[in-house]
Image (cartoon, rainbow, N blue to C red; front, side, top):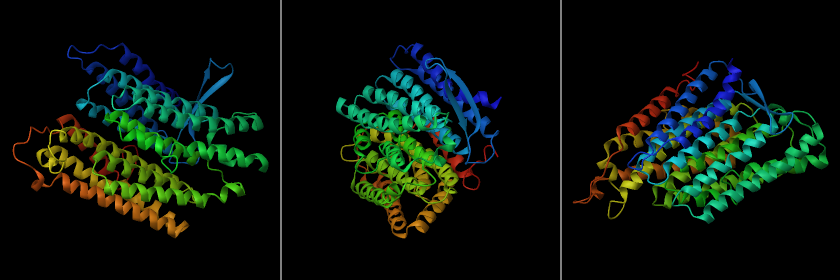
Length: 473
């Protein structure tokens, strides 16, 4: 039964984490056994997700294949899981992104076994979150997903206690802000509340403002909107592990997804009046990220700015007064996460190899032909060239934003243009032969496995240009 596959997809990474914990390190201190288990579990889950796709209709307005299980810790408690094209597209892209992050661990020293163990726990919680069909299950996984990622940050040698504590406190505050409206809704409704019905709930005026405001702030704390962006920007600047970096940069999708599912059909007047103010904060943050990415010399800083400019673009799309964009955001997010994860894998390798150069990383891709080829294709797809579904769907999202508010849409387009300029300039600098000096130390290219992974990702992106769901329909 396809319904039973939902439980397998959610809890298979949890079982895999137990095997990772029981695995032994090799004699040289590496964790090849743990890596093999992690890759096997993620690949199996990807195949199961593709099987789920074939059982769905293209309908983003209702969750399908609802599966339920009793939770013995809470007598009478039920965990409900459902899925649709939107959630499956996000879950599939997250699996591929974390798989790319695992491939990038080859250049990283440290407690890889512990990172892989926590990564599978994080994958379980994120999958459960995006497959949650009722409000209780949604909230439970919303809380749980920050715990393994917090512990991963703590295991990274580059992240200090203050950075990890700041990450936890900001996200814990978001979970507390969401707890109050969730408890209030259950107290008033007194029934199992499914996610697809959240936006249709009619609440009394005296309590509706507080409930929707609490949800609004809880989801905003997961997104890099000023002044709530500091928790994630401070973490990204110190992380040197590509897998943990990938996980941290996946967290904002939970806030974006919350807005997609929870945004009410009829807003209280007090909240509706604040939406334009929030949109202004979004575009101002996008401008700040665009200029900081343009002026920054670090590869990871540019990548961070690029990723969150697009997250905020999708957030503006969510607030656009049309439900049609849900499908476009799903397709665009799928292509975007593939592009971003491929960039993360290559950027961390280039960053590590550039430490051998005396001056800067300029020209280093001339010594890394495989990395140069993969990175150039990902940059072209990422800046909006017509080579993937990112092109068509971003075009539709931007057109709807412009239609809703010309000024907001114009600034959003300008920030996307700046992001494209600094990424292309960065690519040119990395391939500038005139910057290379004689007598440099040996610079290693990416290995065949990572090159093959990058090539497969680009093939998937190319094939998604005409038909985003070509692999199942």
